[in-house]
Length: 245
Length: 227
Image (cartoon, each protein chain N blue to C red):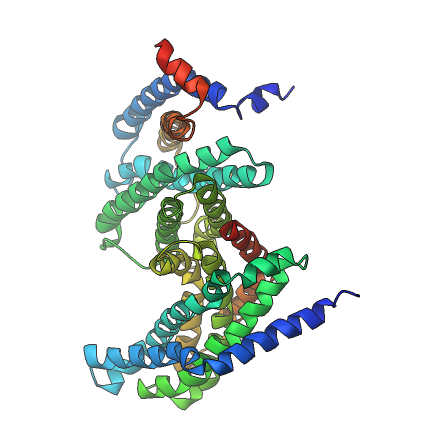
């Protein structure tokens, strides 16, 4: 039953699968982004307090959510790699890191741009902003540790340990607005209660979030293929593939 | 021959570390001197006025303690990895996590505890009132314990990397930021006469978490570095 999952651990199969999935993921991401952008920029009414400035939420919130979930995916992949010794899991973790770091930078930058008209300041050392900044440092530290080893296997295992240790920051970022009196607003979307955000503003946000996730998956496909090329460059299947085309 | 018990092994490690430290006490004392020198930089750079220094004193003392503990981490694992001692520990069949924890705790006694003792003196030089000394020493005692263990994880990860001291700082400082936040906050609250139980309890919780899970991360990282 799980054969489809086990097959993904094989580099040639994953390479081919990533190539097949990527156009579907990318195009659906772009189309949904267009739909969500239209809904968010044109259809949604202006906020009674923030007027039109709130619309940056449609970039800021999905990138912030993704900056954390990509790190979880990275840490889980690293954990799978270290426990079950699946090399491709380490490749997935390595591929996720730059994407996650970019989303974190995007979240910090768009948050900063949103903060200037709203709070009157580009930056504030409140718990959520500070812990998200620490998240960026964790991503950068992961990439730095990885690049400091010449041997790929050593790099994989050492950075996997670092990734797992760093997971402790993710709940800190998520719950920072609940645990502390933060300048950043509290959670509006919850699993149990009705969302505190108006419906015409909510649905473009959810669609944009889905679009960002599909976009992340598409970029991940590209990066995984690049990682496989790097790691398997001497493998016979790859040489056969290159000779065949 | 019966195998020695774990308590005896931990005792042997602690005794070894202390004996080595006594023979090279001039190297052991260097991070402490760095601590004092760094705190001296701030009055020179900012202002000699004690009133102004008093506001930033908790932060300055804490940041200097963090940087001094980073420097001390160089001597935690590198010498013993280079001469093969840790390799023997990994092969010995004893739990590597416990052996490394014993080493880290002794390292704290030699590097962290002197900071805790020196901090009130340095804080007074920056204008801190004497009433704050207990909270300063307590928060630093808990905090430097966390710093030693988190630093130990980073040191185990980077011990095999050439010129890895800057990388060590880059990896360990983000993980140590919560310790810094709560430690400096505790001292700051004490200076304003407010209740310090919150941050101090959180520091203690962080230390317990590090003590419980840190050794496993250290031993996993060390086994990777020893390959």
